[in-house]
Each structure stands twice: as C-alpha cells, then as structure tokens.
Image 1: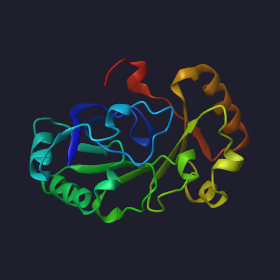
Image 2: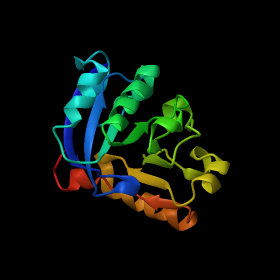
Image 3: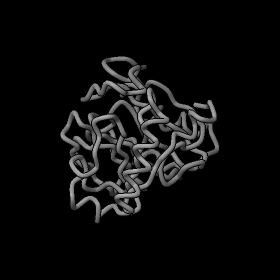
Image 4: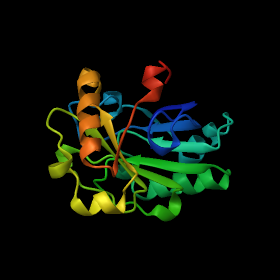
Length: 196
C-alpha cells in the first residue's frame, strides 16, 4: 500500500472532534476535487509499505483511534480490510474516511465518515456513520444531499466550509442549517489550531 504519512494529532472534524488519533494517510485517489487539501495523496505518491509494517508503525503512538484516510482508502480493496483487521488485532479502534465512491464493509471499522463529492454525483457509502459535505459556492443541500440521507443520518451530517473562502462558506452553512436542522456546521479544528 502507498503511504503518504503516519502521524498523531487530534481529530479535527465531525463527531470525534478534539479526540487524539493516529492518522494513516494512504496515497492514491479516484477523484481529483479542485478544493482538495491533500493533493499530495493523488497519483503514485507515497512510500510502498507492507500492511503489517503500517499497523506496527501506529504502535509508536498512544492514541487508541486510528483514522485511515487519503486520498481514497477504498481503492485498496481487500488490502484495506486486511489493514483494518491488523489494527484491531493491536487493540485499535479503526475509523475510515472515504469519498463514498465504493461501498465499504462496516464489519472492519468502528466508524465510517463518508464525504460525498460533486465529482461522483454525491454518491453515499451506505454503511457510513456520518456524512461530511464540503460547502462550496455551488453546494446546496436541497439538490446535493439525497432526501433519504436527511433522515438516515440526521444529526450526523456535517457541512465543512471550503478553505479558500471559509468565512463566506461558514455563513452559507449556518443558513443551510437554519433551513435543515438535521445538518451540523463543521469546523476543521486542526487547521484553526495550526496543527497537523
């Protein structure tokens, strides 16, 4: 598997905001969103590592939660499940961040965050525990969030302002939440704190 980085920080987004976590950022993505803040994970960047070595590297840190992120982790298919299984063997709680372009078996994960993207027509990973949408000038919940998702994920649908115009996108997100109380305004706490 291609690994961009393994590091410990806090979870800066969503339901586990502020909790310590180990991040395993995998290389490769099947989308190339213009607002992506991890473009270094595109293409063939990263160090090739064996699954056991990736899992063992997380043992250097004390956090119980390991967040597998990217890029897009689901492009690794069965190897993603093997990594999650190995991490659980080490006593870790395994969280997955995915763009939703592939269905993921929840049995391997303790928590799945799906961030549907315009480039995939806002496809949702049905096994997700929460959704995270990037609020851009074109984003409207009425047309971008599937009607069933409003009910299925109520209270776990986060609106993340896109970073290049954050103040205006936050204002848009607040207005959207006022119209749809199932939604939540999110923040990238790690960026505000200027930590990884």
